[in-house]
Length: 223
Image (tube, rainbow, N blue to C red; front, side):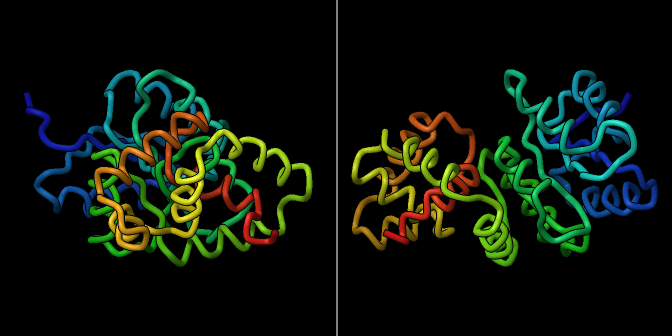
C-alpha cells in the first residue's frame, strides 16, 4: 500500500492527455501527491468525498456536469478543498462566476510547471492565486459585465467595513499582497492580516479574489 504524503491533489479534466501532463508536472515536486483523477464534474464530487484532496485542479468545460457547476457544489460544502480553475481560455463570465463562488484561483493550462506547482502549494496553505495578467483581464471583463444594480449591491455590502478595512479591501482589489499593503499604509503585517480576516468575515466571502471582484463591482474609484 502506497503511503500518501504531502499535498493531496485531485486532477479533473475530460482529456486524458491533459490529466497525464498535469500529473507528471505535479509528481516532479516531492511535496505534492496526485491523489486521483476525474473526467467529469459529477465524478469529481464523488472523488472528493472518497479521497479528501487538499487542492482540486478543475477544468471548466466538460461533458455532463461541467467544472463550474462542480466548483459551486464543492464550495457550498463544509470544509471544501481549495479549487484552482484550470482552462485554456483567458477569461469570461464562467471564470468570474467560479471566482465569485470562492474558487481559490485561476490558471491557464499552459502555465509553466513551476508556477503550477507554486499555485498548488499556495492554495494548500490557504492563500489564493491569480496571475497579474489574468487579474487585469478579469477586471476588464467585470467592467463590462454589469451595470448599476451590481454596483449598488456591492457598495451596500462594502458599507459594513470600517474605514481602514475599506482601504485595505481596495488594495486587495488592486492585487496588492499583505506585505505591499503594510508598506503602503505604514502598518504592521499582522495588522494587515487582521484587517483582511475581518474583511472576509464581514463580507461573508472565502477568498481575497472574491473581495477583489466585489471592490471592482463597487467602482469606488469612479466617485
